[in-house]
Amino acid sequence: MSLKNKVALITGSASGIGKECAIKLSAAGAAVVIADLNLTDAQKVADEINQGGGKAIAIAMDVTNEEMVNAGIDETVKKLGSIDVLVSNAGIQIVHPIEDYPFAEWKKMMAIHLDGAFLTTKAAIKHMYDSGRGGSIIYMGSAHSHEASKLKAAYVTAKHGLLGLCKTVAKEGGPRKVRANVVCPGFVMTPLVEKQIPEQAKELGISEADVVKNVMLKETVDGEFTTVDDVANTVVFLAGFETNAITGQSILVSHGWFMQ
Ligand code: NAD
Picture 1 (cartoon, rainbow, N blue to C red):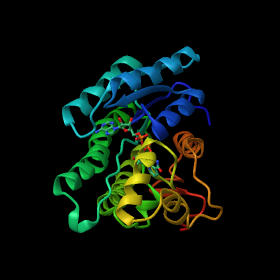
Picture 2 (picture 1 turned 60 degrees about the vertical axis):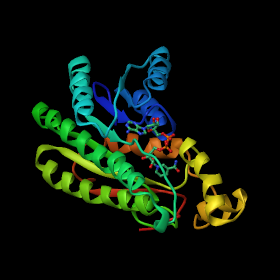
Picture 3 (picture 1 turned 120 degrees about the vertical axis):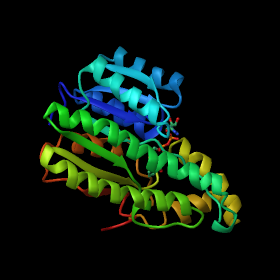
C-alpha cells in the first residue's frame, strides 16, 4: 500500500502523535504538509523529513480559523498538486470537574476538536471530489470516543462527536471514493499527557504514580502506554487502504482499554 504520488496534510503535526504520523506517511511515500499553530516547530519537522530524503512543507494553521484552514489547504494543492489524505489530529486536553468547568474552556475544546475537523474536512473534500481520485480522511479520536473518564466532560463529548462526523462523511463521500475513519488511541506519552498527569493528581487527590497506574492504564490488558508508532502505523494503514471496504469505522489502538 504505497502512498507514492499522494499528498497528506496532518494537523497538529509539530508534536506528538501528529508528528509521528507525518514521518511515517512520508516514509510510505507521501508528500506531507505539517500544519500547526506552532509554525517554528512545524518547520523543524518539515526540515527533518526533507533532510531524510522525504518531501514536506510546513504551514501555519489554526484549525478553528476558517480562513486559515481554507488558505492552508489551497496552498497545499497549489504547491503539491493535490490533497489525498487528511489527518485531522490537532487537539488539546483540559481537565476540570463539570461543576467548575469554565464555559470558555468548553468552547475552546469544541472549537479545536470539532470545528477543526469540520473545517478541514469541508476544505479538503472538495479537492478530493474534483480530482476524481477521492481520498482518505482520518480523524484522531480517542478511547474517549467510546469511554468516559472523570474530569473530561468536554474532551469526551468532542471525541464522541467525531464518530458522528466520520460516519456522515463516509456516507456522503463513499460514492466519490472518499473514505473516513476514526483512530482511537489509548494513553500515549506526549506533551498533552505529560501535562495532564500532575493536573489529574491534584484534582483527584492522588499521587502522579496512581494517576498513571490506576487511572490511565488501569483498564488495559498489560498496563502499558500506547506509543506514537502504534498510532501512526494505524494511520498509514488507513491512508493506504484504497477501497470503501473500510469506511465509517473507528479503530481502537489502546492495549485493550476499550473493546468494541
Ligand atoms: P500534542 O500536544 O503533543 O500535539 C498537539 C499538537 O496540536 C501541537 O503541535 C499543537 O501546537 C497543535 N494544536 C493545538 N491547537 C491547535 C490548533 N488550534 N490548530 C492547529 N494546531 C493546533 O498532543 P498529542 O498527544 O500528540 O495529541 C494529538 C491528538 O491525539 C489530539 O487530537 C489528542 O486528543 C489525540 N489523542 C491523544 C492521546 C494521548 O494520550 N496523547 C490519546 C488519544 C487521543
